[in-house]
Image (cartoon, rainbow, N blue to C red; front, side):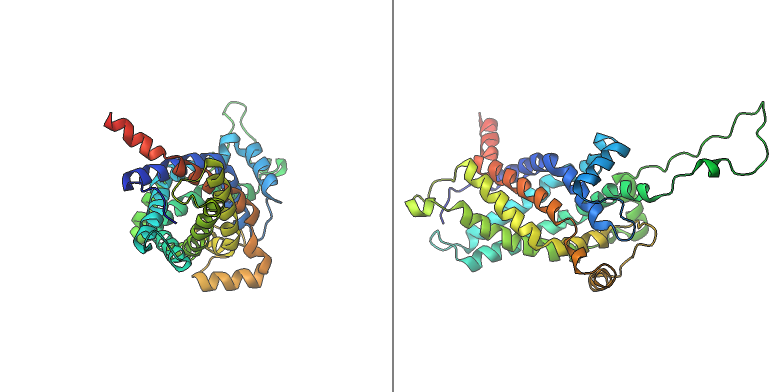
Length: 325
């Protein structure tokens, strides 16, 4: 399928803008997905809506965007690399303007592999920030009986002892410095194998499926040179994204568990992908591998719908055109 050639700088701008817009729209659902996937023993949340409601009640509206700064900072290079790499691989593998299915799958594989360089540290930091609220909700709240524990009677003159300060919220900078100090650069790339195991199959499913859905109608009319309209790119992106997201949800659960550094009481720690898979299967059953599947589909569908819509609207070409004036 031959399409209008777009320069690499324009592809990078398109991917970056698409990532920023998409993440801003769907981040609260992504936070719910992370918290649901990390639940092992204590069930703090019953589902996505319950998770979002409790998050807003205990942490405020902006609590739903905890970790968004990291995502918004790194999603631009991540999405830019993914979308641009897929296009580059498709062009290299095309012959006479045609790309067979195996070429589409291979191009998606290459795109998923390239993005892991940015995706792994981004997900690593984001997960710690997103899951902090779930861990805080598991901590027991002191009762009135505990606060009135036996001891010397307070002085009528001396001030009453200050209440213990609430635990300090983690920050992306603090987590990064701690990981670099204790584990080196490898600490930021914990779970890289699981991330690769998730992102490569996702891209191998998503990009060929999107390309074929996006070409529906144009091929029948013989109009293969024109760019698809916005609504078609958006629907194709949403459909392909949701299907690919659900398909790789078990791999995403494993990745999330491996990259979570702080565990709640009674929750498992894992030595690797195989150990994580075995423990989840033994303790929680096969259904645990689909935790957060609905959230993930609701995140990925609009995220890639918006991404492909922005990408095919040619925002990058417009921006570059302004600089030439």
